[in-house]
Length: 385
Image 1 (cartoon, rainbow, N blue to C red):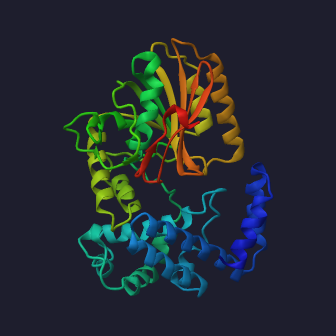
Image 2 (cartoon, rainbow, N blue to C red):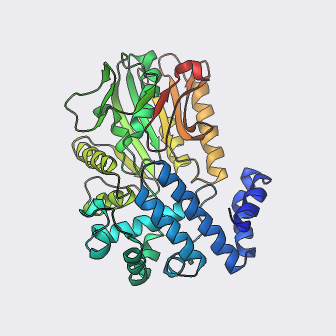
Image 3 (cartoon, rainbow, N blue to C red):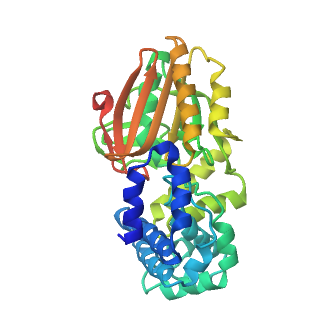
């Protein structure tokens, strides 16, 4: 870790969460040019480590090369040095949005030499792709600066495997009848989780003919696949919702998938096809305002499930506080005939922790853990709190 990154981490640990946004901006403004480059380079190296752990050697290599290029004031630094600060806790958006910008150029056919190294474009990750990569960056600095302004909206349908057990548990009071409300829904692919097929050994849940199959995700324990679920309402919100029927938005989602991960690409394509057959409204709204409006209506005979995955790092502290207040209020009004559940899949001590809170009779439990792509799910059940 660089000196700038180490100092940043130590200072950040001492500052209350509500003040982190201002503190982060002031710290950035006070850094020298070399300090800024060192801090950004550390973000690229941290993301490279994650890519290596999660099965993308291509991106692990390119991100480490890009980190060196940032430190050396190369084209990578020229492309990103005007980018605004990421929200508190969302610094990973910098390398991810940069890599997605390059990947989009490849998928659009505008980087044919680099495409030879990208399996997503029919290439093979064999020889060193860095020379071709940095040449593309040099030629498309303006395009990449524009790409860096797009939010990172990786919509992982595989996360539904980690969320499934929570949905099934939440619906027990209403015979599995559910009303879904997703925060930060992107294209709403996880709002269609009930249309996917899940298999764990001899147990299974969902349509056996579904093109989205999640059959190798469970590495410890099995969710209660014997429980029923029927989604009666599904809706979500996002500051920049993506439309599964839009060619441009589908390209955005494809560009966010790491190019040497064929299984992720295939699952995304299958989930996009499913989304075309089942409507799900994703409103362009602030999460706190949207959720407050949605929960004003107390739905009877169904369990209202509010959920999100890797969303919490993006809203500011004021928005998070308003969301917590809205959820507490909805929980206090919940009844046996109109129960409320809240499920969150966010970074925790086990990687991605999946927590489920239910009302009436407040109960909060850590029910599962997984990686951030929804794989390697360990089911803990209600005893995991």
